[in-house]
Length: 224
Ligand SMILES: *Cc1c(COP(=O)(O)O)cnc(C)c1O
View 1 (cartoon, rainbow, N blue to C red):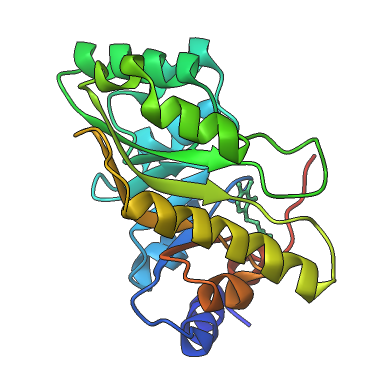
View 2: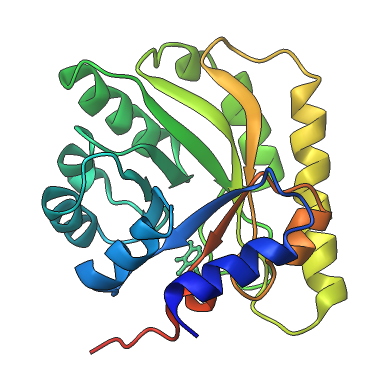
């Protein structure tokens, strides 16, 4: 099937039609991205700073670029002028650097805080306790050039649906709990970025507002 046909069949399976689809285009060519663009997609996700920056420069300017991978502090400056949403913020130090670079660019950068929900310890993110401590800290209130708009998580890489479901539901519960707590002005709980090619339906059942889908749209990635 073509990229366009994949997009149509993915959208047709959505449990929540208003869930935002982010097309994860890492390793994919300009031509493949344009095929998705011509099928109406404007939100694209990348996980490497160099790649997202190069693609930003050559592709249409109405694309909304989502940084979904682990972000190093010393590279924030390259993204700060154009990035639409940073999904994987996993430390106060990183958030402070984003704030600094956003200020230099005269903008406010939207971010999601990444929560560690998977069994593997290789996946980045805050624990629930660390997240709550961060949200209650004095320091976060001083970061006026970032707008935290929600949470992001990645489930365990497994074919055990019950495991994935319980991880997503755990994050959704935390998200709901935070929504009803008093948060600083620069923190909101609107977006829940969970779900990839293999688990986006489970994520939507758990209340995902954004899914990040690569393989199911563009086919397998070739890392050479
Ligand atoms: C690569 C990636 C995805 C997309 O994964 P697929 O399984 O190809 O859909 C989603 N989220 C993150 C953080 C990724 O790095």
